[in-house]
Image (cartoon, rainbow, N blue to C red; front, side, top):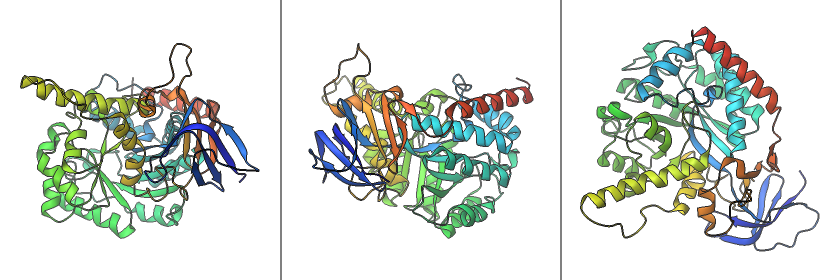
Length: 444
């Protein structure tokens, strides 16, 4: 690869040792960040002019059902139960491997377009081994960095609600066929059901499979009324918690349970918009921080909310500030300080997401030696919007359309506002055809 010098941007490195630099540069060589700082003296490099832009690590989405990429906004006005019965119960059994591939490819491209360079693809539509192959193929073709979260079928309800069916052993075939190296851009994890959807014995077996494969496991917990099952407590009491686990949501998990996660080094993913829209409960962001957990962020269901990670950052700020302000106001007290800052939200979206996925040694900050997953965010793309102010607040105030450039491993995936990763028009056309076929098959 040619050397690339990103010149003259406002560099937010997310690494205290590197610091932030107004008018700073980032040097990329062979897909790796070689240097980041004040004006660098570099020869023989392709120069990318970042004047007026924020240069920062790519965003990290730690929980997205990417296979639903063709179903944008179908679930915007659905409750959680309607989502279960609609998209999971009604549509997902109809998905062919081609439908999974088309939805996943469009969803991954949509993520790249909005500045997400790494995602955890929570693929709970693994109705056959061919569905899994289609998911992996789509992620690979998109050019995104991804953790493929192999999950269970949705072809019948016996896989859910106190299920005793163990995680499909096809995970072993996938590990051997596609994931031979931990250093590749696609890595493996298991997206398991957990004690709220399967029995504790089943969950223990699923975790044993993940640990035998040496991969992370992710599960949903604390989801609305299902959270009353005290899943985290059960896992803790049976010695099953650990630093290789990612817990999604935890809205109705107790403070004691969140402390259990922290004490065992476990990770958490917050999907604030979906959680508030569908009725999971109040986002647990502040309670996770109080327990000692740095949360990561996730879009979750793009069938319910747009694929815009900047919205996700704003949502965690708004929800947590409202939660704490409301408590104070109920006691007749005025807020004295802001409970959660823009900088924290950006950390959740980058370095904390990388840490949750076990990839912080490779991505999440502009640290020399890490892979060059970098985005440029235009701070003033609109003639009616003023640039300036705090850089972290500018990031949180941005939108997907403000993402000018995206690099993954030093490869351009978006440049000057246009995706360069694959045939996006064809991907959209195929996804539209898939959606139409599935709607017709479901009688919609």
